[in-house]
Length: 182
Image (cartoon, rainbow, N blue to C red; front, side, top):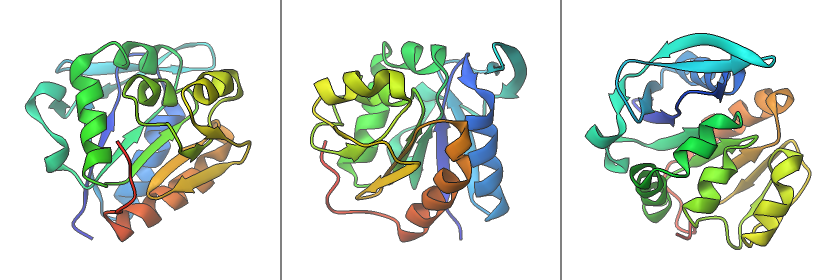
């Protein structure tokens, strides 16, 4: 398919929400780069404890949205809470929306999208505990396993990963969308 996707994550990402979409995309011959705030490795979170380390392929300051066909944001609580405070991460996220490229976020990852100011008017879902945050930021929140809004894919939790991965890959294959608002 000759597509390249960035997974933006840092320490504290929910392990399955990074590893499952990554494997699903690589299974379809999509090149996946783990992009993070620093080089080296980032540590996941699983079942209330630190889990395995994942190698960082690219440092955030060395890439741009122009380098990729789509963006994936895994959840976890610490991961998006750290990313939403980083100006480079917010610019990176915003650029995907400005360019109309697919963006996929699961669980708590929409926290980063709220801080990037890209959820207003969008139909989306998330982990239930951040429902009010999204509504207050202007999103149209719904309780569904996967929601697609003009190339923007969201899901609630790891149980939704099969549907999330399927829709993510469909959106990557489709490519750019005209109606992404930034």
